[in-house]
Length: 231
Image (cartoon, rainbow, N blue to C red):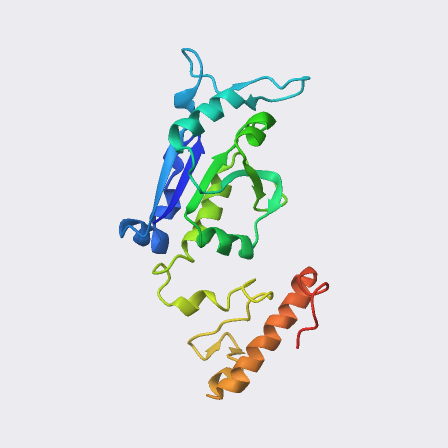
Protein backbone atom coordinates (compact mmCIF):
# COMPACT_ATOMS: atom_id res chain seq x y z
CA UNK A 1 0.00 0.00 0.00
CA UNK A 2 1.18 3.50 -0.85
CA UNK A 3 1.60 5.53 2.37
CA UNK A 4 2.01 9.23 2.98
CA UNK A 5 3.34 10.48 6.32
CA UNK A 6 3.15 14.23 6.85
CA UNK A 7 5.06 16.06 9.59
CA UNK A 8 3.14 19.25 10.32
CA UNK A 9 2.12 21.79 12.94
CA UNK A 10 -1.43 21.56 11.59
CA UNK A 11 -2.40 17.87 11.38
CA UNK A 12 -6.07 18.86 11.15
CA UNK A 13 -5.40 19.98 7.56
CA UNK A 14 -5.11 16.32 6.53
CA UNK A 15 -6.56 14.53 4.71
CA UNK A 16 -8.55 17.68 3.86
CA UNK A 17 -9.39 17.67 0.15
CA UNK A 18 -7.57 14.35 -0.19
CA UNK A 19 -10.54 12.82 1.61
CA UNK A 20 -12.86 13.77 -1.25
CA UNK A 21 -13.42 12.73 -4.87
CA UNK A 22 -11.19 10.05 -6.40
CA UNK A 23 -8.44 10.30 -3.79
CA UNK A 24 -10.95 10.11 -0.94
CA UNK A 25 -12.76 7.16 -2.44
CA UNK A 26 -9.47 5.34 -2.90
CA UNK A 27 -8.47 6.24 0.67
CA UNK A 28 -11.70 4.67 1.91
CA UNK A 29 -11.00 1.50 -0.09
CA UNK A 30 -7.53 1.16 1.38
CA UNK A 31 -5.66 1.82 -1.85
CA UNK A 32 -3.48 4.27 0.05
CA UNK A 33 -3.24 5.75 3.52
CA UNK A 34 -2.14 9.00 5.14
CA UNK A 35 -0.80 9.82 8.59
CA UNK A 36 -0.40 13.37 9.90
CA UNK A 37 2.16 13.62 12.71
CA UNK A 38 1.87 16.67 14.96
CA UNK A 39 5.30 18.27 15.32
CA UNK A 40 4.10 20.30 18.31
CA UNK A 41 3.70 17.14 20.36
CA UNK A 42 7.49 17.07 20.45
CA UNK A 43 7.86 20.74 21.35
CA UNK A 44 9.87 21.91 24.34
CA UNK A 45 8.68 23.15 27.71
CA UNK A 46 5.25 23.92 29.03
CA UNK A 47 4.27 25.73 25.84
CA UNK A 48 5.58 23.04 23.49
CA UNK A 49 7.90 25.47 21.71
CA UNK A 50 8.84 24.38 18.20
CA UNK A 51 10.76 27.42 16.97
CA UNK A 52 13.37 29.97 17.97
CA UNK A 53 14.97 33.16 16.68
CA UNK A 54 17.26 32.83 13.65
CA UNK A 55 20.98 32.57 14.30
CA UNK A 56 22.67 35.74 13.07
CA UNK A 57 19.53 37.79 13.56
CA UNK A 58 16.73 38.68 11.22
CA UNK A 59 12.96 38.65 11.08
CA UNK A 60 10.71 35.74 11.93
CA UNK A 61 11.33 32.42 13.61
CA UNK A 62 12.91 29.12 12.54
CA UNK A 63 11.64 25.63 13.32
CA UNK A 64 14.10 23.86 15.65
CA UNK A 65 16.18 20.96 14.36
CA UNK A 66 15.82 18.94 17.57
CA UNK A 67 12.04 19.22 17.60
CA UNK A 68 11.63 18.25 13.94
CA UNK A 69 14.08 15.36 14.35
CA UNK A 70 12.23 14.09 17.42
CA UNK A 71 8.94 14.06 15.51
CA UNK A 72 10.46 12.26 12.52
CA UNK A 73 12.29 9.68 14.64
CA UNK A 74 9.15 8.91 16.66
CA UNK A 75 6.96 8.60 13.58
CA UNK A 76 9.04 6.98 10.84
CA UNK A 77 10.81 3.68 11.64
CA UNK A 78 14.50 3.35 10.97
CA UNK A 79 15.08 1.86 7.54
CA UNK A 80 11.79 3.13 6.10
CA UNK A 81 12.49 3.22 2.33
CA UNK A 82 10.19 6.10 1.50
CA UNK A 83 11.84 9.31 0.26
CA UNK A 84 11.86 12.21 2.72
CA UNK A 85 10.66 15.42 1.12
CA UNK A 86 10.75 18.94 2.55
CA UNK A 87 8.34 21.29 0.78
CA UNK A 88 10.36 24.43 0.11
CA UNK A 89 10.30 27.19 -2.54
CA UNK A 90 14.05 26.73 -2.99
CA UNK A 91 13.67 23.03 -3.79
CA UNK A 92 13.80 21.25 -7.13
CA UNK A 93 10.63 21.89 -9.16
CA UNK A 94 8.09 19.09 -8.93
CA UNK A 95 7.55 17.53 -12.36
CA UNK A 96 5.19 14.92 -13.70
CA UNK A 97 8.13 12.59 -14.14
CA UNK A 98 9.05 12.95 -10.47
CA UNK A 99 5.40 12.43 -9.48
CA UNK A 100 5.27 9.25 -11.54
CA UNK A 101 8.42 7.98 -9.87
CA UNK A 102 7.06 8.71 -6.40
CA UNK A 103 3.75 7.08 -7.26
CA UNK A 104 5.54 3.88 -8.25
CA UNK A 105 7.28 3.70 -4.88
CA UNK A 106 6.15 2.85 -1.37
CA UNK A 107 4.98 6.37 -0.56
CA UNK A 108 6.45 9.58 0.84
CA UNK A 109 7.43 11.25 4.09
CA UNK A 110 6.71 14.97 3.80
CA UNK A 111 7.94 17.74 6.10
CA UNK A 112 5.88 20.93 6.14
CA UNK A 113 7.78 24.01 7.22
CA UNK A 114 6.35 27.13 8.80
CA UNK A 115 7.64 30.57 9.79
CA UNK A 116 10.97 31.32 8.05
CA UNK A 117 11.58 27.63 7.48
CA UNK A 118 13.36 24.69 9.12
CA UNK A 119 16.85 24.59 10.66
CA UNK A 120 19.17 23.49 7.87
CA UNK A 121 20.88 20.92 10.08
CA UNK A 122 17.86 18.63 10.36
CA UNK A 123 17.29 18.82 6.61
CA UNK A 124 20.83 17.51 6.11
CA UNK A 125 20.98 15.15 9.09
CA UNK A 126 17.75 13.35 8.24
CA UNK A 127 18.25 13.24 4.48
CA UNK A 128 15.38 15.46 3.34
CA UNK A 129 15.13 16.37 -0.34
CA UNK A 130 13.75 19.85 -0.93
CA UNK A 131 10.86 20.02 -3.40
CA UNK A 132 9.02 23.07 -4.76
CA UNK A 133 5.61 23.26 -6.43
CA UNK A 134 6.29 26.69 -7.92
CA UNK A 135 8.13 29.98 -7.80
CA UNK A 136 6.04 31.55 -5.05
CA UNK A 137 5.85 31.45 -1.26
CA UNK A 138 3.01 29.95 0.79
CA UNK A 139 2.25 30.39 4.49
CA UNK A 140 3.45 26.85 5.10
CA UNK A 141 4.23 23.55 3.43
CA UNK A 142 0.84 21.94 4.04
CA UNK A 143 -0.82 23.11 0.83
CA UNK A 144 2.24 22.09 -1.16
CA UNK A 145 2.15 18.66 0.52
CA UNK A 146 -1.51 18.26 -0.46
CA UNK A 147 -0.64 19.08 -4.06
CA UNK A 148 2.23 16.59 -4.15
CA UNK A 149 0.26 13.78 -2.56
CA UNK A 150 -2.78 14.33 -4.78
CA UNK A 151 -0.59 14.25 -7.89
CA UNK A 152 0.86 10.90 -6.77
CA UNK A 153 -2.35 9.28 -5.54
CA UNK A 154 -4.29 9.86 -8.74
CA UNK A 155 -1.73 7.73 -10.60
CA UNK A 156 -2.06 4.73 -8.29
CA UNK A 157 -3.69 1.67 -9.86
CA UNK A 158 -7.43 1.69 -9.33
CA UNK A 159 -7.77 5.40 -8.47
CA UNK A 160 -8.74 6.82 -11.87
CA UNK A 161 -11.68 5.20 -13.59
CA UNK A 162 -9.69 4.23 -16.68
CA UNK A 163 -5.99 3.55 -16.79
CA UNK A 164 -5.76 5.48 -20.05
CA UNK A 165 -7.13 8.64 -18.41
CA UNK A 166 -3.67 9.82 -17.43
CA UNK A 167 -1.77 8.87 -20.56
CA UNK A 168 -2.59 11.96 -22.66
CA UNK A 169 -2.59 14.59 -19.94
CA UNK A 170 -0.33 17.62 -19.85
CA UNK A 171 3.36 16.75 -19.37
CA UNK A 172 2.87 12.99 -19.78
CA UNK A 173 4.27 13.06 -23.33
CA UNK A 174 6.32 16.22 -22.98
CA UNK A 175 3.52 18.46 -24.27
CA UNK A 176 0.57 20.31 -22.82
CA UNK A 177 -2.77 18.60 -23.27
CA UNK A 178 -4.93 19.26 -26.32
CA UNK A 179 -8.33 21.05 -25.94
CA UNK A 180 -11.45 19.11 -24.96
CA UNK A 181 -15.06 19.50 -26.12
CA UNK A 182 -18.42 17.90 -25.37
CA UNK A 183 -22.15 18.62 -25.86
CA UNK A 184 -23.78 20.90 -26.85
CA UNK A 185 -22.45 20.90 -30.40
CA UNK A 186 -22.65 24.70 -30.46
CA UNK A 187 -22.16 27.02 -27.50
CA UNK A 188 -22.66 30.78 -27.82
CA UNK A 189 -21.71 30.70 -31.50
CA UNK A 190 -18.70 28.44 -30.98
CA UNK A 191 -18.73 25.04 -32.69
CA UNK A 192 -16.94 21.83 -31.81
CA UNK A 193 -14.12 21.43 -34.37
CA UNK A 194 -15.51 19.44 -37.27
CA UNK A 195 -12.68 16.91 -37.24
CA UNK A 196 -13.74 15.69 -33.79
CA UNK A 197 -17.16 14.80 -35.20
CA UNK A 198 -15.79 13.10 -38.31
CA UNK A 199 -15.37 9.63 -36.86
CA UNK A 200 -11.93 9.43 -38.51
CA UNK A 201 -9.72 8.37 -35.59
CA UNK A 202 -6.52 8.94 -37.51
CA UNK A 203 -7.43 12.53 -38.31
CA UNK A 204 -8.62 13.09 -34.74
CA UNK A 205 -5.32 11.82 -33.33
CA UNK A 206 -3.37 14.05 -35.73
CA UNK A 207 -5.47 17.09 -34.80
CA UNK A 208 -4.98 16.47 -31.09
CA UNK A 209 -1.23 16.09 -31.56
CA UNK A 210 -1.05 19.31 -33.58
CA UNK A 211 -3.11 21.22 -31.01
CA UNK A 212 -0.97 19.93 -28.14
CA UNK A 213 2.16 21.05 -29.95
CA UNK A 214 0.64 24.45 -30.80
CA UNK A 215 -0.40 25.11 -27.19
CA UNK A 216 2.97 23.99 -25.86
CA UNK A 217 4.87 26.28 -28.22
CA UNK A 218 2.60 29.21 -27.34
CA UNK A 219 2.39 28.75 -23.58
CA UNK A 220 5.41 26.67 -22.52
CA UNK A 221 8.10 27.00 -25.20
CA UNK A 222 10.63 25.88 -22.59
CA UNK A 223 9.22 22.37 -22.89
CA UNK A 224 10.13 22.05 -26.56
CA UNK A 225 13.00 24.45 -27.24
CA UNK A 226 15.68 22.08 -25.94
CA UNK A 227 14.10 18.85 -27.05
CA UNK A 228 13.96 17.02 -30.37
CA UNK A 229 11.83 18.36 -33.20
CA UNK A 230 8.20 17.41 -32.64
CA UNK A 231 5.93 16.92 -35.62
